Length: 189
Image (cartoon, rainbow, N blue to C red; front, side):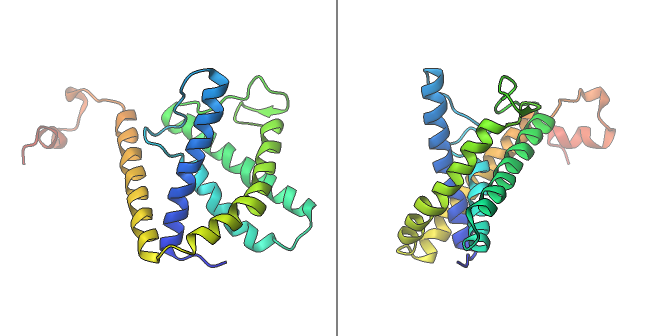
């Protein structure tokens, strides 16, 4: 399976949206009210878009390997992405997107064995159920449609992310700013 840029952007956007839908359903049912998961405001979770691209690439490399190699590969990939995402959200944005602290066999609340097993099962479902269907349906779309949708999706996510980053920046009082930036902040040349 080869992916070009329109396919990559399209897949990232589609799976970010599908991941958001899955998380909203799971968390909303669990909490008993609507929950918009994630750091961004829009209907997408970039972790799922990134995970789908990583899984697509890994499936093309390991499709002929036995189930034990696949389990190990899926464990490392999905749990690694979850760990990196959890640490980054907490470190850079001081946000805890999920917390497994109450679970057995967990690490700093970012990952746990129970959910790692869930991710492995989802990775197999992705490889054998979702990916073939997805590839069949997307083969019917023209590259330009995939490109336009993909670019729009990525731009929306990038703007949303930029707004989150801007909102998380510490505010510096005027007297603590360097003199060269005070005029620029006011809109003066």
